[in-house]
Image (cartoon, rainbow, N blue to C red; front, side, top):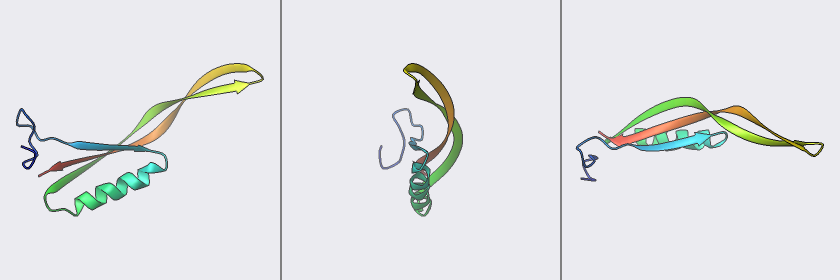
Length: 78
């Protein structure tokens, strides 16, 4: 089954690499490497995720949510 890329139900299995921040460049490099392989299909998806920052100012704690970009690289066999 692994050599055909099919899962137990016969569906195509996909490996997903997710990256944020400076790791986005590395995820793109991984995707480009697999795009050069004849038997692989690569799909790029972009989005955002919420990141929680705990902030302490003058002994008082608070939390804030900021949005961070995320890249998903989906890789599967053709």
